[in-house]
Image 1: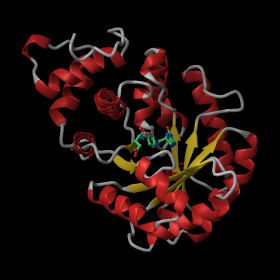
Image 2: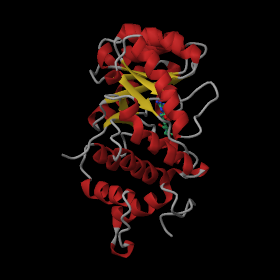
Image 3: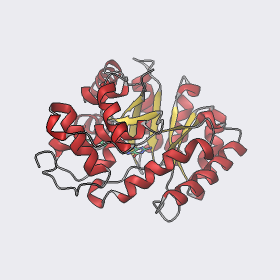
Image 4: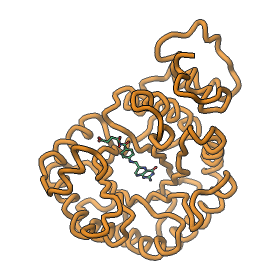
Length: 298
Ligand code: THG
């Protein structure tokens, strides 16, 4: 059986050109159009990211939820750092048990406010491995944070099957060590939290890289995460190749990259096209080659 990954489509967000303007001006059409496009591209969930929305979050998030669910039944993933907006949004979600709360981090005030709200909604939750001191430094700190979050969530009646751990992808421009420790955490996750799911915002890895090159990093990174059973990923649903990987339709590439993770080193002079792209990108993401923006042409 081919490995598959459920896609959480990321493009409806306050930073986006089309979606951001529509959100600020409360125009439903463009948001409903994007929701349809992402759904048709194969998204399992639609992320609705309003950012911190300090001024109007408690009004904007419910408006977003209603805008989308009035035209489509695709499960929603509510994404905001504003806890009051998150709670207000969930109050109007129709299918709460299918929805995702994005996210609860290991910061005490976020846990206190959002865990009871998630328990009451019966929704899925993304447990973001981000603590009071920011990003965990290695896989052990990620594991410790995951245990804290799991205990608090389980204690409120939220089972592991409803939790998606997010080890947080880090930009390749900061080096490959943090990427390796995120993957190491993914390898340990089923021992730490049996039955839980996982997610990663793939584009974090290509943050700061020239726009036309980002998709290559995101695609290969997803395949690397699939080796450790990632269950969902936050993706650009407009990238058809990435969506094909999510559906399990690029088994040849998956086999090659997973083989390299097990120590194979295929003869690159025999590779062409997408196989060569993934080969070169794996070398960079695994730290075997130094990252520069010419990595695909070297
Ligand atoms: N983990 C979790 N949630 C997250 C993230 C994560 N939510 C936010 C973010 N990271 C994932 N969402 C996005 C949304 C858009 C983009 C990247 C990540 C993005 N957009 C393009 C840009 O800004 O250039 C295109 C914008 C446009 O539409 O024009 O890169 O890691 N749990």
